[in-house]
Image (cartoon, rainbow, N blue to C red; front, side, top):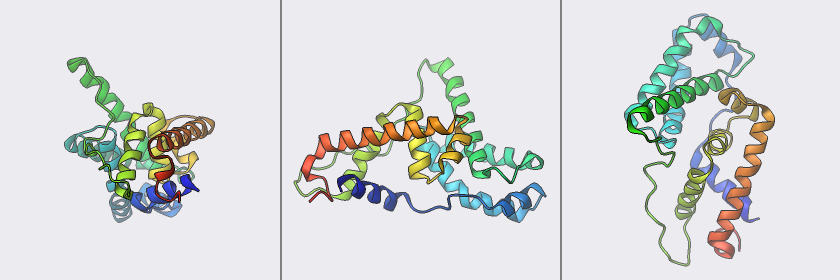
Length: 205
């Protein structure tokens, strides 16, 4: 089906990541194991950094927010609950600090930082034989045009392969809210892609 191909495409570009952090790793970090913390850092730094950049943060701002989030994890390691996702907690810290940073900056600029990623501005060519890279660019623009919370939920659940439970924990919302946002996000994607490509969408032969 048309949308199944789109899903497979996005997953191929998003890369793979484990959906859950190991409880043993959380326990080791709580006990002050620096090597365990380093493994956690190396595993999740790239994904968190890309997530913040995709939400409109500059490279330097994203790097600072990520570093601060990891520092907070280490400083509060005695409070780690191995029954809960440490990855979700990390993203929640960074996401909350990002919103605080945007709110603070808006007091001086009068503007809210755009959610649109700075990188994907080139329009796909008009050739009839569409390429997957063009489709991915369209998908990213559709996501960027969604309401902020919906786009964030979609990126965490779909692009970062968070579980709904992890996403709810990371954003401080209910499981049902995540489900609703995902349903609306898929509806947006389906509607916009069909509107743009129709029968010419790759995978819809």
